[in-house]
Length: 185
Image: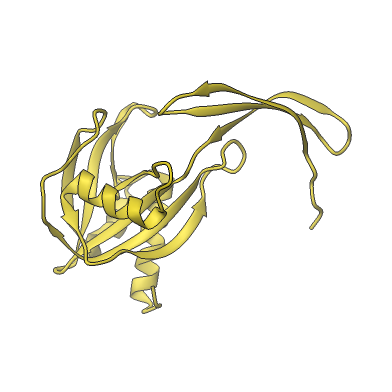
């Protein structure tokens, strides 16, 4: 495969907030062409947690997502804090969003999210034997309803679009495949 060398000739931050960090690059392409305004969303990444209870129910969250302007049903997930490890983020987000904890979280896979315009990655974790141990501890922007769904009903929610965020659809399909085919995770 041919390596495509893009050279950054200038870079600056046009937005740098808790919610969004946006970098504007000037790029010189291999043929010498200049792109003056190539924008990249920077991120520390986020975690997605497939938490399953002892009686084979999956912990899901329903919450409003302002970017798309609607409520979504998803797996618990959240942004990695500065200096936080992905596994610690997964444990924290599961408990904060749902009040559920698990004896351990297992790393499953890291996904590239939007490689054209972002450096963000999603770290997928499996949390077995999850149980309700506390109250939710939500961020100011969060209003989350926790829903428990029997694992065998998840494919229906994916097929009919009830769960439609691509990172969560892919994560669920991957975990179901690994669990159904007895692959070690």
